[in-house]
Image 1 (cartoon, helix red, strand yellow):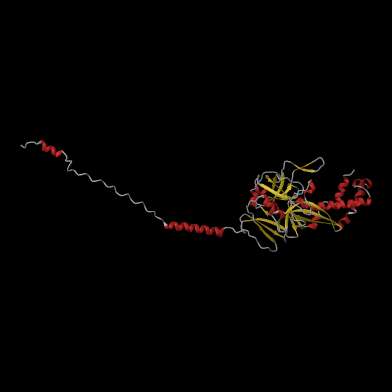
Image 2: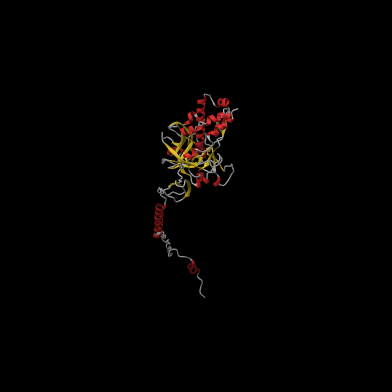
Length: 415
């Protein structure tokens, strides 16, 4: 049996540090290279093509100056004596033909009222009645305000044009009375009635009427704002057939002999149906009643500018209704006699209504005084569509209550 040698056995399990090699250092693999940015050239080409197409579409499809959306096309047919206002989204200016065709764009380009008043100052005029006796002009009677919406047509109120024949008949009655008083050598109508009695006094005065009619001539003109001695002679009148009073379609159109190159645009139906209280509005007109010096010089009229806002929109019975029937526009613009017929316009310079009425009080002398509440009326402009057939101005002056009837009514008041 082999002898166990413990020294040899220990050597088997004892490591020899002298012969052991140092382990090699582990080398880290190099970091991967950054990914290459791949540029998709096709995407760039597509984006460039889209930009080019968009630019081309903008250039070729945008509306020209003569083509503007939401424009108002107004056609005036002189041969049929009608006024037609229609909404046209692609209308362009038409050449003049037998009828007078005008396209008036409705453009939303807000300006200051100062700019609009300056731009449209010659589109406004004072309506005046010329009274001639023995071929001499003896008086100009202011009747209201008018404004042009085409080269040959001005708009105003129905009660303004009714003032033509009312003024004529009153003037003829007064001239006949003056002649009777002069020949009978009495001071006034009361003395004439007391001296001759009611029937005889009426007979004396009315005997002068035929001669006065032969000696007088009445005409109507529109005296243009800020153009001294410039006027347009009125040749015909068209009034709305449903006009009865201030709470009705109080609108009329007057045709003039001389073409006029300054006129307003009318608001589109879309704008009119979307009017709301609070919208700023303004007018240019000729208020004269109870104002110092009549507020106007008839040889060189200068219009008065006033502004405020819409305060309510209803029908003529003050009832809430659908937008199409909100024809009565109430506003807070101060008004008095003479401003009737003025164009009420917005900050786009487009006419939305005609001023036609004001709430008035009577003072202790019986004179009208504007109510301080400033709740006044206007007629929405689209009612101009409904004016009736044109009546020659000569025939228009012969309407109304006759001079004899006026005198008879006055004589009956005397006891």
